[in-house]
Image (cartoon, rainbow, N blue to C red; front, side, top):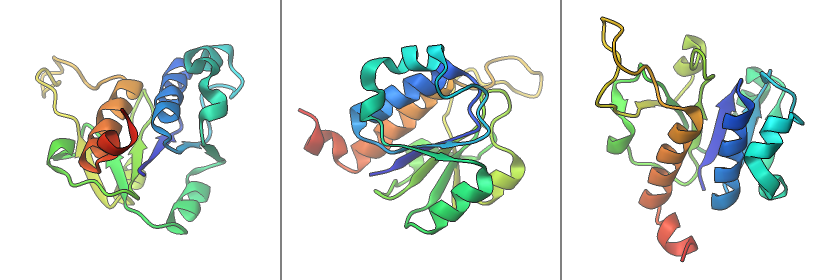
Length: 163
């Protein structure tokens, strides 16, 4: 089962919504600190509703600690970035992938992206071009849902686990 990794998330409701998606799909959620909020933040809890006990949550105090943990397990690190040249739609996901998503304000730092085994983007019809017009990126929780469900679809997780 792929795992979801949020690198230094900043907005409590986004993380709460991602946690709810992870609870619904029995997907491990990894949070790489520092976080932009307290883990007991009221908005975080409200967005995750009463599903927090169902979330398989792992917190890592920084990128180095997460990376050590990840390297001690199998699987590719798959970074999602609007700057990537390959679409998630053309990628063959594996059951042990680590799906890495960046901060809401500025995404993933270049050094973090460089450590990834693959870099993918989510295509948008109105993405921002060199003139700055259009949309820079999708909401974090929406992006996680799009990519995670595609990975589960490819892996047969939706057919085998959900009625």
